[in-house]
Length: 377
Image 1 (cartoon, rainbow, N blue to C red):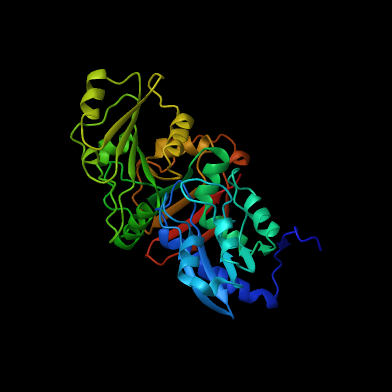
Image 2: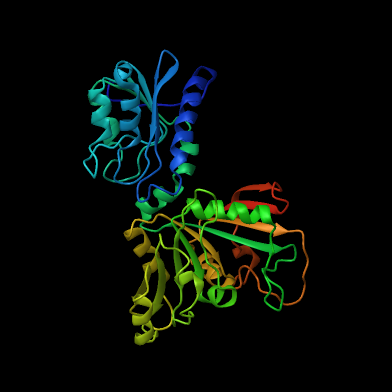
């Protein structure tokens, strides 16, 4: 076999040991969930004589990568050992030196990689550098799990658009509020606690102006040890109340109001003068250009968006194929009437054109029916 050929992983009983250590690396990577954008989540373990002698994960963009932490933890024991890495080691100089070089200097004997890095600056070059140094490389161990862990990074780096999860809570008869507008609370306390965990994990939380006007939400994270996501409101005519709590609910993350030339210049100035408030004004009339907005989010280093409402904005984003995943909490409640729908902005004329979901999962752990699925592409 050519020394430069990468061994593609094929699952077998003899390879269960590789899966075991790669799972450890994936668990480490997940510790930084919501903290590494625009970088990916990466974990690494160093194994010698069938035991972990070093471990590490990437904590935050601009700080040392997972391999560097793991090698430092292993010290001299890294020589002749195997490194398990959830993503291809980088081969370029960014804010930190190439991790492939660090593995080579440590005299690692074998590197097991879950998946190639989709970043065009890497894209196989890290693997080539390792192989050229005589290191045995195995690729593809738990690749699907690694891809799911970094689904937001993969979409952002390959398309320039953020990964969008639409989360909503509705009654069994499909209402997000009664016909009088009352929505507190559709889902139960356990489901709402889970939502705060989502807020901690996502970079941006997105709502439309109607949600702010009707509910006056704070959109902060009340999960212990969590952090507030960036709060983003799509408000084409700048209807938002200048005393809305979303404008001052967090001192640690910005609140962005996306608007258009239809906004009052005086109101724009007043909002921009508020602490942690940014007004992004687009050169359009009344309707914010959603693709431009989404690309601008990635340009700021935010890979993931949690869409929380309302039905008009969610329907539009689904119709225009920007949403990647949905999580619906279906409460065992019936309210009837003409209450709002979670997808009022989605207009499908033929059942054959209906949006379908893949990889469905269901649970009732919170007491509500929790449905998760990916939008079929």
